[in-house]
Length: 139
Length: 136
Image (cartoon, rainbow over all chains, first blue to last red; front, side, top):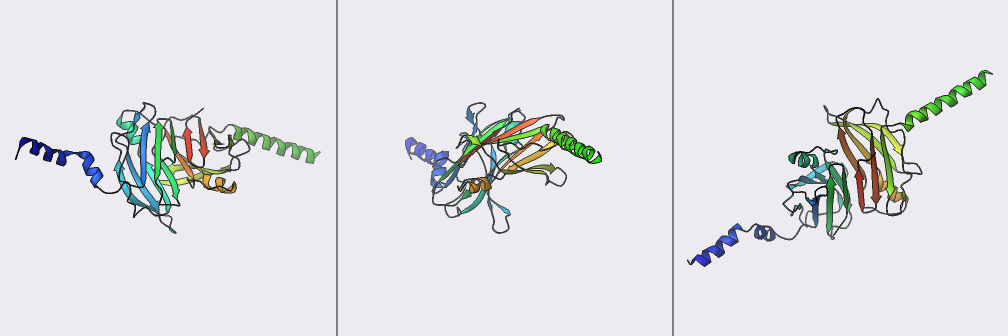
């Protein structure tokens, strides 16, 4: 096998982006964590997605993940699992601030939202500093 | 004479109670930024986390006034270091205005270690966004 061909094969196996894109369709729910104090993505932030059961109102864990270098966490949920209901995204923000040697006012941030039309795409960013945060429904 | 004395006593009592309320070390301010107006008549509650049982204990229930504020959340003595949660019934609020919203409620959880602190925790809100910060 030629060196060039071997290099090509190596590229297939080692490419991180390819693995993600081959994992299937894009999640209908996405997030983006931004450290607005430093003007950088919030990377390595642990997060978890829950759905609230009816009628028990108990929270069921759907996914746990950690944000990548761009502050994103692909593959939060599949289209099949994304039914109407009340969801919660929990971000371990204090852990994040502690990992960069800082204290924070909020031990964690939970954003509870209602999905009435699961056919749409929902983007839920979290813009945060040590003493503030904001979120909105984006696209 | 006695009636006047009693009335005076009751009036003074309520005025002093209002003073206590005025000086809550924890205050909030809810603003409807879509309308550029205070969010009035929003129900909210303050809870403290029991670190041993991990259970939230409700301390106060209130409703925002015409200025979007809710005086009297907690007393100086009651506001000991710990983990607290302010829960805003935002879904109910938008409902009462005949509108839908993305968030059924908003909970802001915060923590502090040093005693004798004061915090102002506003909530800026629209149907599809909110933000909060630690103010003064």
